[in-house]
Image 1 (cartoon, helix red, strand yellow):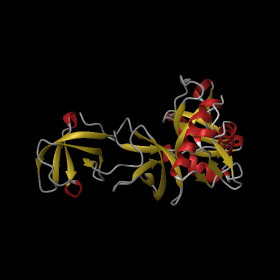
Image 2 (cartoon, helix red, strand yellow; image 1 turned 60 degrees about the horizontal axis):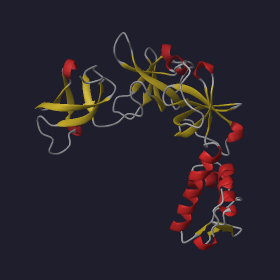
Image 3 (tube, rainbow, N blue to C red; image 1 turned 120 degrees about the vertical axis):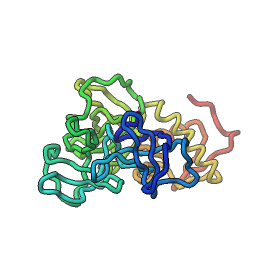
Length: 286
């Protein structure tokens, strides 16, 4: 059966003037409008589509992908306010996404960018958004291990650092003393679990800890050196933002990796930059 607010792999039932009708199982036939039909798609073939409701509340399919699907969090722009209904957001589809007034934790205005949860209204089965994030985050203690990589989305800045949503389920915190550059709200990135706290909250780091962090990074630096004729314009004086952009790690982690490579005579410092030494000069190290 097709799932509302999700991507589905559906079979083509029949062709009509407005488009193709897809087999939605218990939901019945679902129209895929003509502008979304790929070439050479025939009856009986399957197509990957997103299923939602149009402005007339009819089930429709699209090959487009929204900024967030049902059960997910997204960062979206407020387009307009309806005095009776609520705020309408741009979620990447031809029909805008509604945040009813009852689901607004704070008043929204056109032009605002907000983090929202996308869900189904249990009464009407319509797709709606909510800025009341805490209601849609798990408060159960997750079974993460220290150092485990996770996917996060930045949702706000606090005096302690940045709040984030971890794996679309839990609230996390990146402490400012572990961040070398400002982060953008709505940005998605990889992080690492530092501590799991009661109530489902997680302390995060943008870098793995200890050897788990340094060992893969040294390999990454060596690979970059080999691809650039043995020289890089990066060293322990490089700006943190450029290091993060190039290698995806903090300056502290980068300096630790350079120290490891220097001690084992893989590299030498050019000031500025680093140079790869011949393998005959390398020492085993630890």
